[in-house]
Length: 427
Image 1 (cartoon, rainbow, N blue to C red):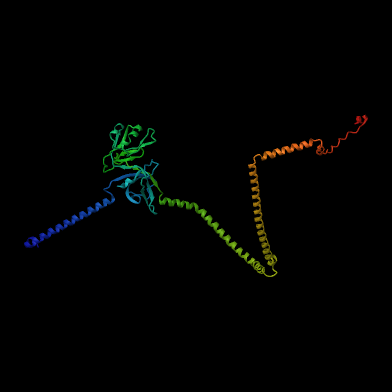
Image 2: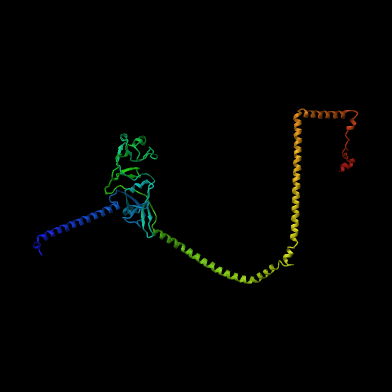
């Protein structure tokens, strides 16, 4: 039926229905576009498309277990991804593979010039490896959000609020006298001592929303973060700490097993010989045990009869031996007791004698101290007595009493017999 054949009421109702269907289609299309946009935004936010990313690079021995797009981990978290893996040129013999990766905000702030490394670790037993960066322990941030300016040294004093953009060493170039990120106002003296003509400074203004400078380890300063002629940024280099892949480890282990396998076979042969010898020994021991069984039974009978009257045990250990031993030990005990008593009495008597002797000597000492002329008088009496005795010896009446008896004179030497001159000449 054509539309013009409908009544006005039906045409009005149909037009109203068409408008409602149109609005519904528009609403569904808008809802679909909104859902798709939200999905894209959520995916971009989850993958960090809107976040600032700091690029880094390192070198590895090989790319096994790694591929572009793999996540980069920091303290167990996914903080970035690998963006590029390329082999080094053929004339480059120090490194094999070039690995480039990015870290998203704010995790690149954990990477500092001291302590941060790129570690290639094993992820599973199937050969998968993962790139993991370590947190820094000191030094300077690898990237900053302040612009770098090269200023003549004579103009530095006019910029007291700026920050140092480099490490300053003394004239010898070995001793650090001022480090980066110090205020210029606190570093004027070290700057003058360094002998530099130009110095790099960081602007004190509010940090920018993009990376402005990257640290240069070789020069010890911050370089502007710009693209080179190959449309690449000057990135920061992280030293790598690589562990061998699981395949390489298994291959090395298999080589060790192959090397040790002949020794293991020799060892098993030796063990087999030892076991066979042990079997022979046990068989021989069985024969010896069977042969020794009569002797052991006889020995058991002999030992069973040792405690019988008149047996060998009674001969070796008579019955009155214990009585004699008890009597001897009792006498020894009495002797020791009496000796101990006598020793105690003797010690007591000796102590009394020593006490009396001490009293005697103390009394004599007291008398000598009381009579200071006693010793001189005794000495004079002895001298006078000696003089008196010597006078008695010289007195004519008593001289004979002190005479000494003469001793026998030694025998005279026999004289030679007289001989005639003739006999003398003949000799």
